[in-house]
Amino acid sequence: MGFHGNIAVVTGGASGIGLEHVLQMAKQGSTVAVIDIEDSLKGFSSFSDKILPFRCDVTELSQVRNTIEEIEESIGAIDRLIHCAAIMPGGLLSDTPTEEIDRVMKVNYLGMVNTVQSVLPYLLKRDSGDLIVYGSVAGIVESRRFGAYGASKSATNFFMKVLMSENEGSGVRFLLVCPPAVDTPLINQAKNNGPEFLQDIQSTRKHLVSPDFVVKKVEESLEKGKKICYPGPAKWVQIFYPLFPGLIEKIVNSGNM
Image (cartoon, rainbow, N blue to C red; front, side, top):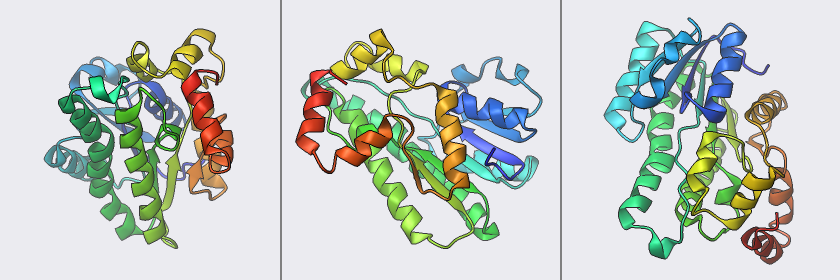
């Protein structure tokens, strides 16, 4: 396992990929602070005494800052941040209320900014630790009925690439994770109105990767010193999309992935 520290923070850690990270690190003996919304955390503390739930809305900067400060003071120095918190609605942009697009950006992009900017100063001051953020291949390839989500992840991808460049040579290990479709509850949010390829994947299970597979690839990428992790089919998207953008977009939007 690539985690060399003792205390980790995982946003969106009550389900999906975040939960997989939490359980694996706790199994290894690490103390994990789970940041999620209140409903998701009900009964969560029964998992393990190594897992400590913190109710926090990542879109509220003051809440995030206070929560991170509380973790630092009551548990100890944070050695790792894994930001997974996100929502994934689908739908045509012309049919999506502006308020919904605004909400997606607040949760997926500004929630990430709030969390990263709250934890990063601690890591940089100690010149150590891991900062892992989940972007998406949906932020790379333009996909119909995925405009709001894709835009939020495109912003996340760009933010992390610049952040890593600005902190080149630091003792902090940065990693941007751009997974393909993952078998988690999050994917169900786009089941009815999302892109055709996502609906096909859900019915056939083809090209749908598991959370434990993604977590394994994240740890491997950190140990190899990579800055961006493209698990499973995502690696082929990032290789071929710059070469054949029109073809990849056609495949994605035709639902034939």
